[in-house]
Each structure stands twice: as structure tokens, then as C-alpha cells.
Length: 460
Image (cartoon, rainbow, N blue to C red):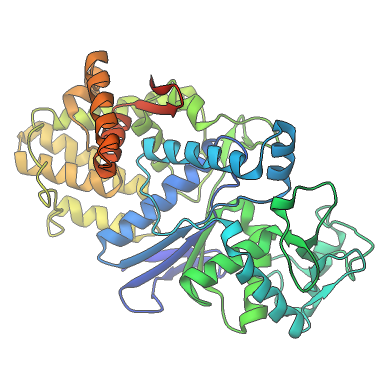
């Protein structure tokens, strides 16, 4: 029976979906103005693991992970680069997908972009205004009246009094209260027209918090099962989402709130604002993507994850041990549907107990290592296939063991031949085959980069 730590209740709770055997899950995604860093990698891998476990547990899952493609940082960066918002965001959306693909992250069922849901945002804001929870200030911004929402602070545990005295409060004279946050920003003359939309309150653009309320409720309903994201989003972003959504729809917004812990470097949170971060691309120049994925999964998702080369080197050795156990089984389990976990088997039963205990991947991985020892001892093909099948549940151990252990997926001639085959598939408009080739190369650590001059490749 699956239990999830619910940030809202501050304890582990048995998971009971709103609709039997169905999971509706929303995760706050990236703000696309730069390359993703390891903190973003953790969010992607953690909730990919959650997504995979629900699917392995026979739930019908709808997974939404949004893209924030409009905010102050994006506007500022586009202006610095002298390019359009769309050019900037599309470039980094493409880069994000390359990084996610390299890490074995499945695409979510929906990946909405904020700019596609402005009408839904305006609808929520209007409902809040009708209910007395939103007002237009003298400067033209539309703000949320925090003190009028009973229960503000229930997710973060912060009281209004503490917030009033806190440094994070932005004191703006046009707000009725310094705690109020913006729902709709009035248009500024120095901003490009592509970031301005018409509304009953005048031209402008949405505030950050309202974006997720609109996308979540549109794609999953006004009340859904799980909302996730990094721990840094708990306040104010997720707190404000609750206030907006419950204020507008007059019902509970989300049943289970999940937050993954920070990635830390030298005991400080890794973040762009602190300037102490590594991009995923920088790390993948030194380490195999599957090593990075295993490194993230070796820590419980709610625990801090301490980054160091020593930890990644140790993870590489650990992954080597698992692939060594599979060596000799290269041809097995490649047929469609052949990698099926036998959940009645003892190791799989232990694995399930661990994963059902708030997605305890460290314990689940310990089962994989015990099973690998059993494979080495018994040389059992059945146990090896069980190891590979359980690894697949976590997005691991699906490569050719010999190729992985040798540290090579193909030689240069083979890479060029596959690129040529991909180009031919694209010319024939066989895009599924072209995408399959790209993903196969990516799994071997080869990233393709298309440009007007042709297709180039590089190892990661």
C-alpha cells in the first residue's frame, strides 16, 4: 500500500486517488532562459521516478510538467541577447529536452507553456475579483488580497504575522497590504509587444504564481491528486497557488504535496542566484548520464543531495557492479513485453515495499545490489532478467552491458552512418524513425545538434 509524505499534513499518508486507479499529477517545471542545472535534473529525475512507479503499479497516470516561458528573467535575458522571447525560450526548451532525454527522463503526458494559457489565467483572476480576493491597484497591477484568504500559510506553516515581519515581503505602496502578490502586471512601455495581452484591467502579462494555477486546473481539473516541485517552491509559489486556486474554485486544490530536497555544493543550496551551480551539460561532459541518474536516485528524494566528484565516481563504480552482473545476458529481454517483473519473487516484493514507502529509492536500489550479488553467485538467467526488469522501473540498466563497461556505444564511423540514416528518414518524412535514431545515439552518449550547416555530434 503506497504511502506518500504530504508536505501539507507533514506526515506520511496512504495514497488514495480521487478517482480509483487514476493519478493526476502536476509538477512545476523549468523557467527557460538558460541551461538546466543539477537542481533541475533532480526535479526531472525524481518525478520521472514517481511517474514510472505509478505506471508500474498499474495506475492510469496523467503527468503534467509545465514550462514557464514568460517572466521577468526571460524578458531581461531576451533584451540582453537582442532576440525575441520566442527565440530565447525555444532554444532553451530544446536544450532542456536534450538534457532530459540524456538522463532517461520520460516526456510528461502534457508539457504546457504558460503563454498558451493566458485566457485561463484571466478567468481565474476575474473569479478572484468577483469573490473579493483580487483588486486592481493604482499602478494598474491586479493583486491578490492575502489576508482575505482564510488558511494562508497552511502549506508552509508560516503565520501572517511572521510573514509581515519577514525579509521576503515586497513592500510596495500601491498594494493594500505588503503581503499581497501580483496576479496581473500592467504593461510597461519598455517591454516588447509579445509579452503583452489584452485584459479587462488593461494590457499586461500574468504574474508567475497564477500560471501554474491555470495550467493545473485546465489540464487536471480544479481538484487533483498530486502537486510536486522543488522544496524552494513551497513558499511562496505553492502557497500562493493554493490561495488562488481554492479562492477561485471554492474547493480543495490538491490532496498530496510533494517536494524534493535541494542539491547542495559545499553545504550550500545549488542555484543560479548563488552562482554555485553546474549545468547538466557540464556534468555530462565528465560523467555518463546514467551515472548521474543513479546518483540522484541513491538519495531519498526528500533528503539533501550533496554533489561532489567523489560521490559521482563512487556511483560509477556502483553502476559498473550492476552492469557486470548483467554481462553475458546481452541478447535477452529485448523483445517487446519480455521485461516483465515477477512481483511474487522475493527481491521484487522487497523492492515494492521500499517504493511504496514514500518512494524509498535507496532501499529499492539496495535490493538491486543484493539481486546482482545473487546473479553473480548463481549465474541465473532468470535472476538477471529480474534485475534488468526492476532496473527498468527506475529507468536504469537498459543498455548493452559490454558496451557500457567498455565506455563506448559505437565508433565514429558507426555514428556517422546513423546520422546519415536519420537524415534520410527526415527527408522521407519518417519522423518517428529519425527520432528513434536520435534517442538511440543519445543513450550511447552522443548528442546531435542540427543547424543550417547540417547535423553535428558530440559526446557527453
